[in-house]
Image 1 (cartoon, rainbow, N blue to C red):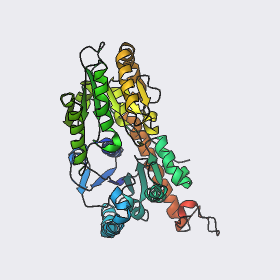
Image 2: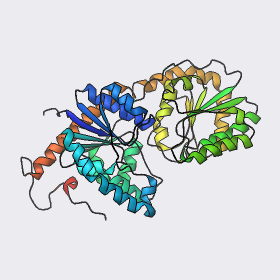
Image 3: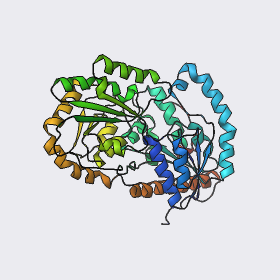
Image 4: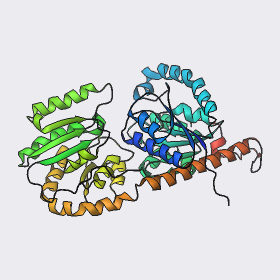
Length: 414
């Protein structure tokens, strides 16, 4: 059996240009493609720090307006804008695929639906899923999953993300592959303090948004302090444009609780290593499901204990890690209790951090991610070649009525 042929001309598209979780994974995916010898062109919807990072990696980066699905577009009030933006982008997507003569189009996240739908005729399609919107209604989930029907391979960042997709589109099971996110060891790693002493340094890294539960963490700080633990909270991250009101609410809540001097807003940091080195425990208090928990893994690699909300993707990220604790989501008393346990159990926690880091370093290495990703892209190209051959009636085609595979059948909704 011959090994799959690796694509040599790849068009990679991503819905943002920042340096949060999925942006970092996308950048590492592009580096893996370039290392395999592929000619990679990247399309982003706007400029940002990711552009320079990808330029430095050796990619040809273009910035172009494109339809990115937002929650507002999926509401009835946004349908007209959704149709208008889709019609605007039809020619542009086709033109960019043809211009690069792409053998494969790598689509990062389901929020770029046109690229899956329009690439299928001229190139192989690989869709990389980072999100698992299980909290959305069934109609929204089916709309978000619809473009996946047009992908030759669907790469999922966790078992939970795969299961969330298949709950809406079970016929796609044969095309899905789980490829764990690459998570590098943060820069400036220092061992955990052998004794706490002084101030308990609590940290949060990520978007400042309601779904991430940052307000829950702010509200837990005062009871921790009143219980006799001197503590501070470092918030590393920024709001998404349009959510300025949420940061104001966080600052107002800290002021009301009399802990404004203990809550430090550090803003976005492209390198979170020094921030992790400057804390004792990281908290990931997400209210809604997460496809995976990159930052939780980063903290473990940095030798820090982690407290996460017991969401499937986050539990999967800390699987087998002795220095990680999962608590009930949106439960402030449970968070307070978990933080107090960090203080009382600190000697044993600190002694276990090195072993915990060794457990996760290999399963999230860049080299393992590159190998798995390139294998998936090669599988996508082989699948596309077979699909084209069947369509043209070539070897392996089955022309009997009713014998077409699911992926070649007309799309319909039951």
